[in-house]
Structure formats: C-alpha cells, structure tokens
Length: 205
Image 1 (tube, rainbow, N blue to C red):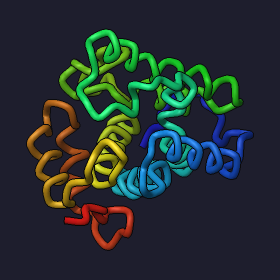
Image 2 (cartoon, one colour):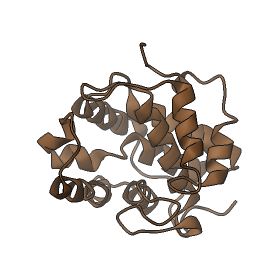
Image 3 (tube, rainbow, N blue to C red):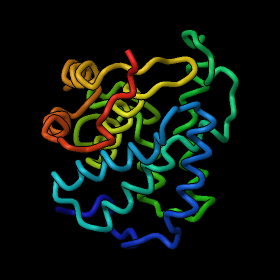
Image 4 (cartoon, rainbow, N blue to C red):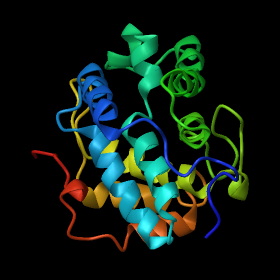
C-alpha cells in the first residue's frame, strides 16, 4: 500500500510517551471515563492492519489518534462540557478545533502526516464534514479510519454530559451512516474486529 503522504519522514522525532501524557490530559478535559485516545489508537491500529498499512503509516495514525482532539483542549471552551445542543455560533466555533489541532501538532514537532490526520478526522465520506469538505477518496484512508474509530470509542464511553450506548447500538449507527459519514469499506472492516478490550462498551445499563 502507498504511504499516506508522499515524502513524509518514516518516523517522527516525537515519542509516544509525551503524546500519552497529552492524551491523558485530553481525556480528563473532555471527561471520558476511560482512556479515549488510547482506545481510538488501538481500534485505528487494528483497522490499519486490515488494510495492510506500512509500519510508518500505522505509526502516524497511532500518534494522530492519541491526540486527535488536542485542538479542543487548547480552545478550552465551556460549551464543550454542556449537556445541551450547541448553539449555531458554538457549533461553528467548535469546528475550528481540527485546524487548531493541526497547528498544535506542528508546534510540537509532529510530522505533516499526523498534522493532516488531525485536521481531517471530522471529514465525512459524502463531503459534508469539516474543515475542508473533502469527500470519498479525497480523504486519506487513515483519516477515514480515524473517523470510525473516534466515533465508536466516543459513543461507547460515558462523559458527565453523555451516557454510553451499547456496542451493538454503536455498530448499528456505523452501519446506518455508512456511505454518509463513514467509508463503507472501513465500516465493513470494523465489523470484522473482535476480541479487543477497546471494543467493549462502558454502558452500565
């Protein structure tokens, strides 16, 4: 398989250890009951194996997964913790977190591949995502994988303002939104994953 980004360095000079610390801080900020960044990274890596990613592409995907929402933490908006629908101005402001995250990744010495995966992890298969409204194959496969992994991990964990849903419900959601939000082939690959602790739902009902 081709590299995610041509001419990107095979590995970053940035180790996973500080990224894990940043990821833990992000989880605390967002209020996840369990290590969200690590769950997203594990699911994304498992999917990358399904698509035969090269080792350096898996590495970039793992790093992006660990800190994909760093922009939210940097923005530090109160509405992120609100147990209500966001106002339109808040929703538009919130969408900036992907670009801010890209900038933060650059400041911290992460590769351009990681920066762009953070920028594009909210792009939708049908072109209605943000920030660049990319569609279909315009979105790198790694970013499409990150979209699925992030969504599943978020839906199956609890936060102070959001109750986890079951694994079965989350899988149904991915299937229902396949071809709209998600790349159908990534969803299909996701449904073949099994025996992973990270796939458990933390719904207590």
